[in-house]
Length: 156
Image (cartoon, rainbow, N blue to C red):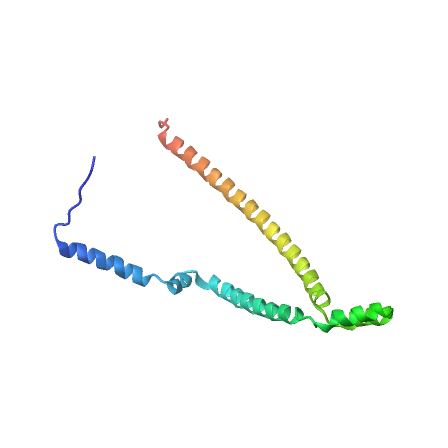
């Protein structure tokens, strides 16, 4: 079975099309974000902090990744000549990437573990609250069913 729709007047169709176009033009990202209310402000701050931390870490990693090309040559020369103490001191005193990044890796591991623990606790709390809501809904449904049963009983 098919149904055909006709517009009696073309102006009604044009008005409908204009309404749809106006609705599409009125919908933009800013209006959507404004509908988030006051809770969007902490999210904006976290977004700015994320961007800041990203670029700060990018600059630090690029700075740490610069390796002196003569470093290995000097180490090799010291080892070949038997001057192990000088090679060890040079390796220990040279600011290199395994030394610069090692502290950052440790920090990343600690913050990742903390984030996972916090996320897990938040997930458990969410499920607990969701269960409490479901229990309350079930109690309300039982009470409303009992009330309907009372209303349908014949009066004595």
